[in-house]
Length: 230
Image (cartoon, rainbow, N blue to C red; front, side, top):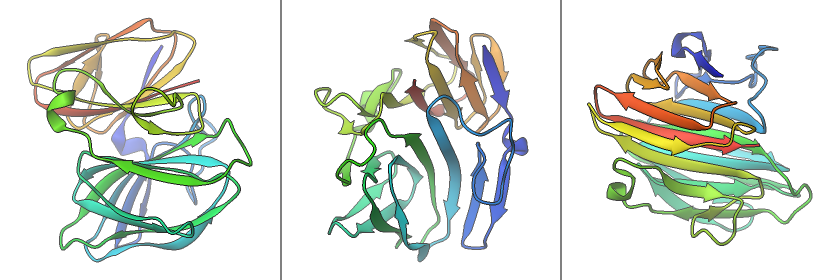
């Protein structure tokens, strides 16, 4: 099953400094048919104005992944961590027993990012944060693993049975990915693509389950972000 969730139908909140699109129910946006996808609970497509951001606020028992699309985001938290994550790179935070954090766009230009929440498999665990640069050429024409629950795969660690991956699809080319039909995959592309022949527009949500392989085609260059979760 491949379910296309058009960008125009996503939840929307414009706070001036923050223009957010919600793939799933979040804050004041509530749709009983879009409460999540498997263990994926939140996927926000955020535009954050320069010299602005999210002031300190708390979380607990959630795996929070930030994929920066353009610009950069600077993180600071109650554990003493501080770091800047730039376009194409990823940061992860396991909220565990509780953590307070702030995310600011300290740049002069707008930052765009995906904020993804996945239900934790280890409630009550010790909170943690991590970030890592990922070479852009490593994802050209294939998916690069960015974060997962496998401690031995060399990617960022989260406390969930999930994988977060990124790829660059060149216009006129095809990318394939083997999949477990029992799992829930969610894909967002920056340009129109076809997934197993099903057309999706730029920044549409593509919810997949019951498929053993994904064949992704595009006529223009596209940045792909995919989560494979239980």
